[in-house]
Image (cartoon, rainbow, N blue to C red; front, side, top):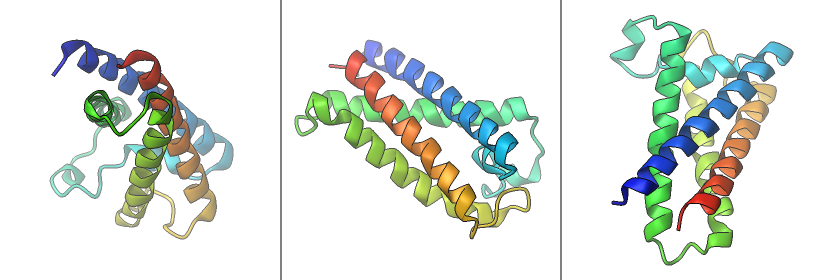
Amino acid sequence: MNSRIVMEATWIGFLSGMVMALFLGMMQTVTGHQVYTLLLNVDYIPIMKEYHFPESIEVLFHLIVSVILCIILAIIYSKSERIPKKRIIYFSLIVNVVIGLLLYPTTSFSERTPSITSISAWFWWTVAHVIFGVLVGILLRSCIK
């Protein structure tokens, strides 16, 4: 594994994760839908739900996940012959929207997050994952390979 790829992916994950957190924080402030709270929520993880973490630690958890995801995507992209440079944005977009759609139902495990039937919350959650996926794809394309 190339350490340059890991470092670049780490910065991509940090930057993209911050953009997503800021976007969802803004949407929660503007709309009142608890989508930022959902992003930071760890109530669905058995051991983690026993603790109350400050927001800064919850953001750190989110950024760690973002960085790990970007490192995995960068490694896949750098080693793959099947993903042409011009297709990495689409690949990243699809992966991240699928992750967002799979994670949204975790909202049902918490009283602090939006209702699982909230179309507006689902919409903003999905938009945030689209933004994240496209940004990650653009940055990967410009930095990796």
